[in-house]
Image (cartoon, rainbow, N blue to C red):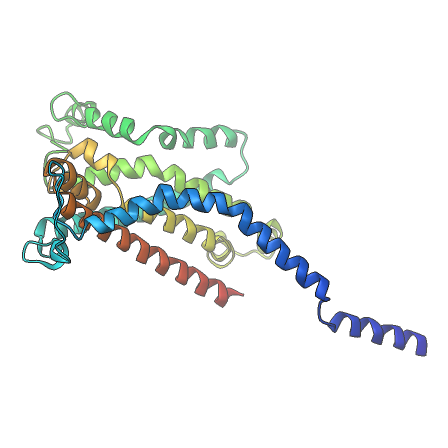
Length: 319
C-alpha cells in the first residue's frame, strides 16, 4: 500500500512540475522557424496589398487627377471639405444602396441556404446529384450570370416578360433593370440566385459536424423535429452560420460586378465600389476617388473587427 501511495505521489508531483528548460527552448526555436517560413509570404503580401493600400491612402490627401502628372497636398479636403466626400449626397446614396443590398441579400441567402442545406443533408439516393446541381449557379462567373439575367429580364426581348405576359400576371412589359422601383430589387434577386449555393455549402458543412448521437437520442425520446432543430441543431451549427454570414457580408459590401453589368452607373443602384470606379475612371478624380476607396476599406475593416469580436465573445460564452 505504501509503495502504491508513493508511486501515485511521485506521478502527481511529476505532472504538476513545470516544463523543462529544454522544452521551452524547443518551443522558441519552432516559433522562430515559423516566422522565417512565413516571411516570404508576408513580404509578398506587403508588396501586393500593402503598397497599393498605402498609395491609395496617400493619394486621398491630394488633388491628383488621372490626366495631370502634378498633384498638390490638400489634407482632409477630399473627406470633410465643402465639396468633400462626407458632404456628397451621391456618396451617401451609394452607401445606402450598398447597405440595403448587403443586408437584404445576405439575409435571404442565409435563410434559403439553411433550408437547402437541411434538405440536402437528409439521406437520399439522389443527394449527390442535388449537391452537384446546387453548385451550378455559384460556378457560373458573376459577369456571365449578370449579363444572362439582363437579357432574360429585358423589357422587349426578355423571356421573363414574355412568360409573365402570357400568364396574364402583368399587362405591360416591365423594365426590371431600368425602373427605379424595380432595379435594386432585381439586382438583389440575381445576387441571391447566384450566391445562395455558397451559403448552403458552408451551412451543409456545419450540419455534417453535428453529432448523430444527439439527434438519435432526441428522436428516441420523442422530441418534435422543430424542437430538435431549435435546441440541438441550430446551436451547434450557429458558429458555422456566423462565419458564412460574415464572409458573405464582407463580400456584399464591396459588390461591383453584378450591379455594374446590370445597371451600369444608375443612381438607384450605385454601390460604393461603383461610385469609386466612377470617380477614378469617368471623372478622372484620382484624389477624390482614392478618398472614397479608403473610406470603403475602413468601413469593411471596422465591420470585420467587430464581427470577429462578437464571434470570440460568443465562443467564450458557449465554453
